[in-house]
Length: 289
Image (cartoon, rainbow, N blue to C red; front, side, top):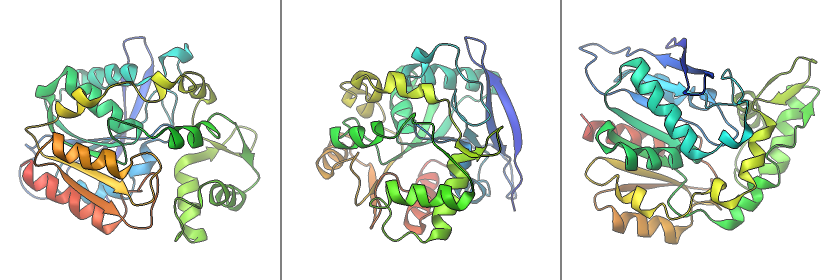
């Protein structure tokens, strides 16, 4: 098993933010741009605990806890829980960790952050994976997420937590067994101070998300086009209610050379444990050598 180190960086507004740092485990010089994994709205660094060790055989891998998630500080001002702030936090990480260029793997919100960051600092991106997200976000998917984010539910046992996820997200993952839901629960949740299982994020992230321009910043097509000229991969869940087939098709037209892989019988968002997704990310790293 590939080990990681818990590391931290400081945001411009003084938050102590956390990431998992997987050193390169393969032979040879470690001179390639690292991979930085950026999770979705309610998720954290643990979302990449299966993918990161695979990629770490080739490159250093950093898995982030965005502000208000996991082991990162919660923001003093909930209004900072927006994609532009996350992009600014990412820039601070690069400067403090001495990273000149990197390959981004962004799931959902993490993909929005990747596009915004590339538009601001195109020279820093060596390649990008967008997991079930694009420059247009389906209103139906936003409404579904808005119905559960920030509710603050808690559960007596991990099995109760897993069953609750199955009840709310079963349509997105129709082939999941209870063992899969347990894995998902342990990635998304943690043991609270009162001994109950709770979601591992600041419930206040729901406040800015309720404003449509914060949930999905308007007109991100220029930011998507900014990714042209480097290896780009779009991973889409076949059942996704966030990234529509029409938006995905237009993405490939507007950034020639981008690859798209569809994960069958999966909604929002693929876990990136799927063999097809892993193989596609490996191909992208080949192109980014």
